Amino acid sequence: MSRVGKMPVSIPAGVDVSIKDDQIHVKGSGGALQVAANALVTVSLDGGALKFVPANDSREANAMTGTLRQLVNNMVIGVSKGFEKKLSLVGVGFKAQAQGAKLNLNVGFSHPVNKEMPAGITVQTASPTEILIKGSDRQRVGQVAAEIRAIRPPEPYKGKGIRYVDEKITIKETKKK
Image (cartoon, rainbow, N blue to C red; front, side):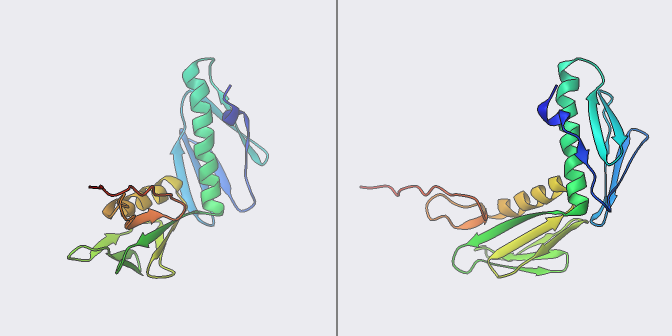
């Protein structure tokens, strides 16, 4: 059986989990999330923990057990603590400004770029060169961060662009005569 799938998901105080109609619903202070249950995985709620067991001995059921367990674990963490991604702008004159659910970027184009945030995602700018994206859904937070980074990805010669804070850019050497 999957090593990840063997571990139960502990449910902290203030988080409500319900399993019904092939859906797993998780509700907490950070919002409410749901995921479709898979027929290959049997989910049971024992006290303050969720347990995942493969429905049969197939390889697909074993793999899906670990996958579903991690998806539910991310939902529990998301509604209790939340997820965040930090982006950094590197370049002369590059700046970002958050206005409600909208992010305004000046990243070297002839026009400013406006990015609308989806529901459940908040954006903050502590300084003009730092962007903080927060939300309860890990996949959506990562997707929004990737879309913002794709507006101006870091280029390999000077490293200018939008990058993740912990991202390491390898700078290429320029052509020699």
